[in-house]
Length: 262
Image (cartoon, rainbow, N blue to C red; front, side):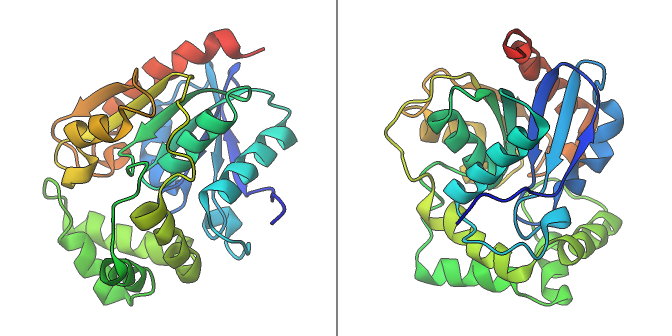
């Protein structure tokens, strides 16, 4: 399918350009609580919603890694950005990895926030069906899911808002199809080494496949020089649970892209 111009929003005016993508359960508004802490003088962020989410709801597609990567490149082209840093969260970390691997001429570096493994989560048919069922579930089921999530306890208000944002910002069928990407398939190419710098931000209160040891093992052959930064007290959504610290880690690594802005 032809690349689409995703719905996106620019934030900042800095010389270092960054495309930041959404996770499985929400559009890029997941980052709203972290925005006040971003350095808008050093960086320009393009908050890009993948097909089926936020500003890109209703945009049809195959909902795959390669399609999403092509869409991100189309966003960068439309902005006149020959090079940019790619930031992915959870499932979209696979998109950032694929971009870094297949388009090192365009991507200066990649930041992976609580990344899905490059080989996928290894879900079998029953597990995949359960994940896809969650994507199509009613509000009560979604609310219960957030209430049982791994990680430190968060307020009932956070749980309610998170479930409501899921409903408001994600097309159910798009989310169900994307599940194949992170639950089963992973990256289409898991052999070609990534040569651009990669940083993975892991959270030790997250589910086991997303913690530092598992992430390091999963990425070791693909990008052997990956930098792992651990947040000991956060779960899967550090930009909501620990926004100032998350921004500090993100921008420390993004600062390395300054030599590639031209």
